Image 1 (cartoon, rainbow, N blue to C red):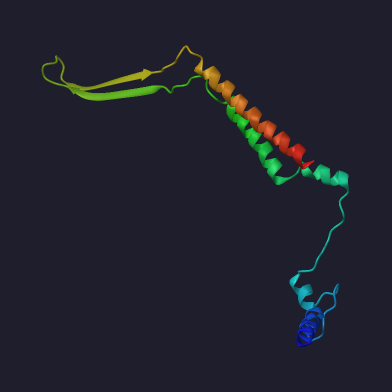
Image 2 (image 1 turned 90 degrees about the vertical axis):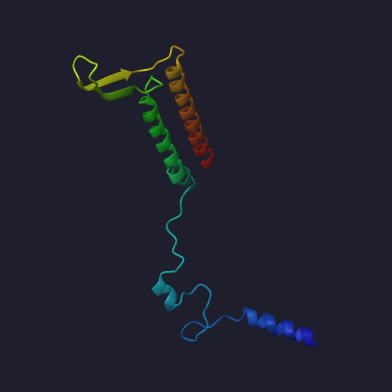
Length: 147
């Protein structure tokens, strides 16, 4: 019998509503003055229809960032040079010593540009376009998944 009275007392204690800040018991569905002052009320906006929700999925931040990344990648791909090596500039300062007919300061410069006949530049552009298409396909898949 004592076990039954303890569980009944515990149940009644859990069901009782806690007092509000003024000492009055709060009622479900009513907000207290502190809730109003702190702005923690459950405020709901107008309901979205299904078509509006599907249309809004295209405006999701993750999808917009992925679309922007695809456009940035396309612009970067268009600026890729066909040459796979940079030009090299060599500057060699030095002095001519007395065995020379005219002793003094001497400066030699050389500019070289390497290239190959294997088509590496063309293949690099082709690989960059393929990467961009994969990124675009991921963006389309994410957009379809969200619909």
